[in-house]
Each structure stands twice: as structure tokens, then as C-alpha cells.
Image (cartoon, rainbow, N blue to C red; front, top):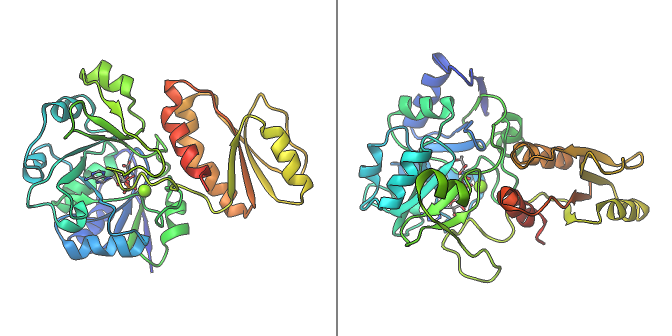
Length: 330
Ligand code: TXA
Ligand code: MG
């Protein structure tokens, strides 16, 4: 049985938090909201607890997990070296939607780092996440709270649709603001490498932290320094197509007798009856905030095909285009 406890997302106090912290301390699994997506948390210092996260998600053991901290002093315990670029980025963006990869210390268990020489750290800004980590008194290992390779959850209901019965507790703090996962930056390279684009862009890193980071390769077939950046990831079960010619594609699929959801912009023509029409915002951040919710909605409706209107190019859209290319890769 997975229990759900509601928490005030702005001022999370009291019984729910102490209960969740207690579950974490005794090795249990708690899903909780962050400013990006819901995480599935376990005591990062307990290899058994972290192994249970892999088990609940069906996650390959070769994929390392982000360690979430509430206090900057934890960096020194978990890393053996903290590059200058990492410090500058942390100063500018923590707490916030940025994950920093640095050389690990012996304190970070092998199961967290997937046996690698680095550890990924993030200090989340969401009041529930920060308060939960603080109350637990240990760093919290947390991947996104979905079954492996599925769509990340941005509400407690999404978490339950994937993990009900597999985890102890969900803290329901409402919908996540950013809606896509954190920017992951490898600070062991010079210049630092963006392993996963996210809410904080390369431009932001330069203008706010004075760090010029380069984009990591996500080409299929190339070795990955971020194993989670596998080609097919964040993917719905339905055939998912991103195209400029979305109206024609919706029409064709419907003629073939397939059930279709269409993620379209308001300026595009309304589809005929029978198509699940989901209007997307024109602003990149607003688009990111609702993207996974719309994909979950299409999945829950059981459509066979999801057609997505191609968003504009341009650096504001980098993170959204990354997620769309993963969702639509066969
Ligand atoms: O916004 C987020 O980052 C959310 C919330 C819960 O914090 N977490 C999240 O975790 O998206 P997950 O496990 O779904 O994605 C973490 C990504 C994966 O691509 C993983 O391979 C990569 O970070 N990663 C973790 N540790 C790493 C390491 N030591 N070196 C390189 N990549 C790492
Ligand atoms: Mg994930």
C-alpha cells in the first residue's frame, strides 16, 4: 500500500513531513515534489535503501542517481574535489534546478554512483523537498518518480499511476513549476559539459555564473557520460511523432482508424471530433511546465498515436526539443 499525504507546497510543516522523514530514515521510499519533477527519495547513505529505488523503478543498475542535499556543507562530505566552475554555478543557481557532477568521495555508495568515479549533486529549491531533506537529516538519492524510461511525473497522481503499491509514501505538494528535469552539468571537464539540457540554459550559465559550458553529445551510438541520457527515454507508450506537418499527420492517422492525441499550438486549426486536442503554450517555459502533464493525459486516454506540432527552434527551446526528441525516438 502506498500512502498519500498532502503537504502545503509553500509552508510545509508538521506531521506529514516528520512522518516522511521517519520513513526515509528507516530505509523506505518517499516520492516528493521538487521544482522540476517529482523525485523518488531514499537515504543516499544506505545502499539497501537505494537498491530499493532501482527495484521500484525497474531502473538499470548502470544508471547513477542524483543525490539531493539541503545544506551546502554536504558538498564537502560527498565529493573529493569541487571544481571552481561547480562552485560558481552553485553560488548562482542553488537552491534550484541544476545538478552538478563532480569527483565523488568514499561516502557516496557505489550503488548511487553506479560504480563510477563521480557523484551528481543537487540542492532543490522546492520548500517541500528542502524541508524533507532537512528533517531526514541525511542526503536523499532521488531519480524521477516514474517507472524507468517512462514519462517523468509532475503531479502526485502521475507518481501513483507508475508506482502505486511499489513505494511507501507520496507527499502531494501539487504540480511542479518547471515541469522538466534539472540541467545536468559535468564539472569534471574543462569547460564543463551540459549532459542534459534543462531549465537553466547555457546562456544562463554564462550570464549568471560566468561559466561557459559546452553541450554534450547525445548522438545515438556514441558512448554516454550520462547513462540516463539514453536515446529512448521520457517516452510514452503510444507512437509519438513530432512534425511541422502535424495537421496532415493527424488527418492521416485518423483516416487509418487510429486514435490520436494532438499537442498543438492555439494558432493551428482545430481538429475534427474524435481527436484529443491539447493546446500547448507559445512560451518555452510555459510549454515545458505542462508538457509531461499533457503526455500523461494522452497516455491515460489510451491513444495509439501522439502527434506533436514542431515547436520553434532557438535557444529558449533547447530543453523542450531535447525531451521531444527522446519521447519520439523509436
Ligand atoms: O530534476 C531532476 O533532476 C529530477 C529531480 C527529482 O531532482 N531527478 C531526475 O533524476 O531527473 P533521474 O535519475 O531521472 O535523472 C538523472 C540523470 C540521469 O540521466 C543520470 O544518468 C544522470 O542524471 N546522472 C546521475 N548521476 C550521474 C553521474 N555521476 N554522472 C553523470 N550523470 C549522472
Ligand atoms: Mg528520470
